[in-house]
Each structure stands twice: as C-alpha cells, then as structure tokens.
Image 1 (cartoon, chains in turn yellow, blue):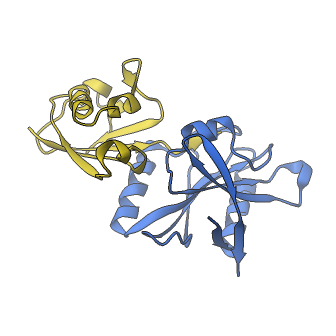
Image 2 (cartoon, chains in turn red, yellow):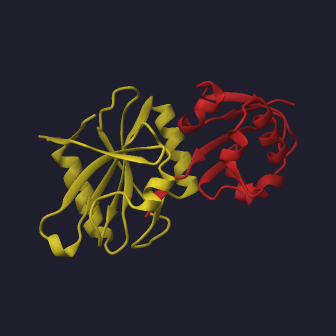
Length: 90
Length: 138
C-alpha cells in the first residue's frame, strides 16, 4: 500500500526538494516511521516526545488528523497526506 | 530582498488591524508563483482570537494552500498585527515561522504612536530575523 505525502517547503531539504513523496503504513505513526527511514531526520521534525508537534498540521485527504485519532489514524490505500507548518505566532 | 507592496494593500491591512483590535489580525498576500509580487490580499481569521497570539485555523490553512496551488500562486507575504507592542517579530513569531520564502510583515497599531502606525517586513529563516526594506507603490 503506497500513499502520497505532500511535503511543505520548509521540510523539502529532507526530501531532496521533492514536493511529494511516497510512503507506506497502515497508520499515521507507521507512515512517519517509514518516511523517517527513507528521509532521515524528517520524523524528528514532525514528532516531539512521541506526539505530533503542536505547530505541524497533518491532514489525511481533507481532514485534520487531530480529528481522526492523531498518530493512530488509520491510512487506507489511495489516501493522500498533506503536511503543513502552522501559520502562527505571538 | 525588498518587499514591494501597494498603498491600497498596506491601508487595508492597517484597517483590518484597527477593526480587529484588541485581537491580533492576520492574513496573507498572494502573487503568481515565482514572481515574489504581493498582489492579492487575503485576510485570514485569527482562530486564537487573542491580543497576544495568532493562528490560522488548520482547516482554513489547508484550503488556502489548495487555493494557492490551484491558482498557480504562492504566499508572498504572511502578515499579522501587534496591537500593544512594536512591529518586530516576537520569540513565538520566530519559533513558528515555517515559510522560508515568505516576507513576514508585522504592523503595529498600538495607541502610544497613534495616529502613526508601523509596517515592517522581515525574513525569518532558521530562527534568524533579517529586516528588509519596504517600498510602497501607488
């Protein structure tokens, strides 16, 4: 099962400038582990202490994963994952 | 780098800042991909509704990126207002700055300088803030 993951500009140094990469996994957590094994360092930019970083938004298709079970969110064949840095500040 | 931006867009951002006082306001200015031209103003909702914090709603953020992609545009400017402090990036602004290609614009409509305002632009890359000139065009 291969899914497409869209990578934001700020993380493209980890993916050799590719805007989208392929990954595998039945849950978001597994997908991130798979991504990190192919693009070393990417996992750490997404996770902190085993949880999704507060200011990284991850979507499965059009839905924020926070509403889909977070890291345990199930991934189906043909799903598309989009990673976007939050636009936020003080 | 210099940010070139029209007086009309500058005025609209300052007006939005006054209208949303005391909360911070926020938004983007879009332009054709690769152009670095700040042409299309798109105000965003500050989902934090706070005088000291702003955040684009995650759903709005995804919709924005889809729209930008569909239109062959890019985010040229990301702006927000400081309503009580100067128009300089705060520590949180620097920590969360996630668009290395964008001009980060800060405006200040704080009372003690009224009716004057501040409109300043920065690059924020890997935690390093570099102020850049702003050229306001007719």
